[in-house]
Length: 478
Image 1: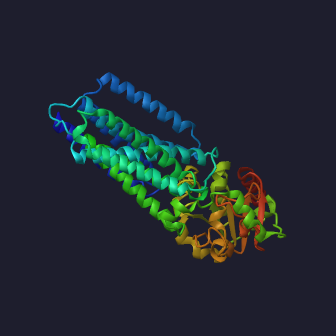
Image 2: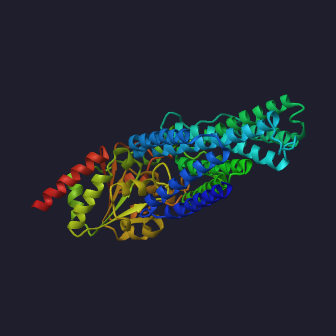
Image 3: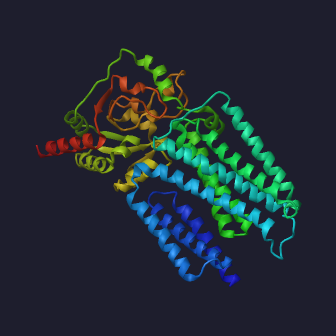
C-alpha cells in the first residue's frame, strides 16, 4: 500500500508540473487546467487513504459535494468576478494550511504517538509556525483584497500604519521564535504554548490586514499574485509538517509561479515589489483625481457616434483593439469579436494589444477574449505591438484607462510616471469607449482623452460595440 501511495503522489506531482507548463499558452491552458485538476484528485484520494481518515463511501461523498460546489461556482461566477474568486481561493488555501499546521503543533502536546519524542523537533516546529504565520497573513490579506476588488472596501490608511505593521511583524516573529524554542516544555507546561500560538495566529491575521488595506486599487493585480504565492508557500510548509510529498510539490509550484508572476507584473509597471507594498499606488482616488483634474481644466473632449466610428474603421488599413476592465464589466467580448470579423471581411488588419496588468488579475484580458474565440495569433503583448501604433489608422480602446495614459511617459508629476503603457496616442485616430469620464484605478485623469486625435464614444461598451456592428453590416450591404 505504501508503494502505491508513493506512486500516486509521483503521478500527482507530474500532472501538476505538466499542467502548469501547459498554462503558459492560451491554446493549451484548458487542457493544462484539467490535467492539474486530475493530479489534485489523485493527491487528495491518496492522502486520505494514507491517513486512513475516511472510508470509500465518505471519500466519494466528499468528492461529490466539493465537485458540486465547484461546478456551481464555475457556472455562476461571471468573468468580472474572477479576481474576487481567486482572492477567496487564496484565502481558503492559506487558512487551511495554517489550521493544519496549528493542529499538528497541538497534537504534540495532547497525543504524542509512540514514534514521537516528547519534545517537538525544532525543524518541525519552525516549519509548522511558518505555515501558521504565512497562512494566516494570506487568509486575512486575501479577504481584504476580495473586499477591495468587489468595491465594498476602499484603500485606507492612518497615521502610524507602518509602525503598526512593523510592530505586528515583530510581535509575530517574537512569539513564533519563543514557541519554536520551547518545544521541550510542551507536555509539561502547555498553557503558555496555547497562549503563544494564539498570539502568533492573531498577530499574523492582523498583519495581513494592515499589509493589504493601504495598497491602492491599481496595484491589486500584483497583490493577488503575491498572495497566491503566499498560499503556495504556506501549503508547502504544511506539506513538510505532514510529510506529504504531493502537498510539498504543489505548494512549491504555486509559490514559485506566483512569485515569478508578481515580479513580471512589477516589471510591467516599472515598479519594485517593495514600492508596491509600501507605495499605496492609487490608494486615494479622490485626492488623485483632484490633483490631476487641474492639468486638464478647461479642455474639452471630442465625442463621436457609432456610425462615425464604423465608417472610420471600415476605411482603415489597420485597427488595433485595446481591451480593458470596462470590456469585462460590459461582457462585450463577443460583440468585439463580431466587429473584428466584419472589419476583416473588408480587408482591415485587426489586432489586439494586451497590457500585462489590464483588468483586475493577471491574464484577465486573454481569458476574456479566449472565451469569445478570438484567434490567439491576433493577441499581441505590449512589447510586441507597441512600435506598431504609429503605423495604425485607428486604435480602439474598450474600457482601458491607466494602461493607455500617455502621462506615464510625459508627465513626471503623474503618479504613474515611468509605468510602461500602450502607445495608443501615436495612432492616427483613437476611439475610446467609456461610460463616463471617471478615472481608472490609479485615480487620475487620462491625458489621452483630451488629445486632438482622440474621440470619445460614451455608453455601455456592449451597446456601443453592438451599434458599431449594426452600422458595419449596413455599410457592407450598401
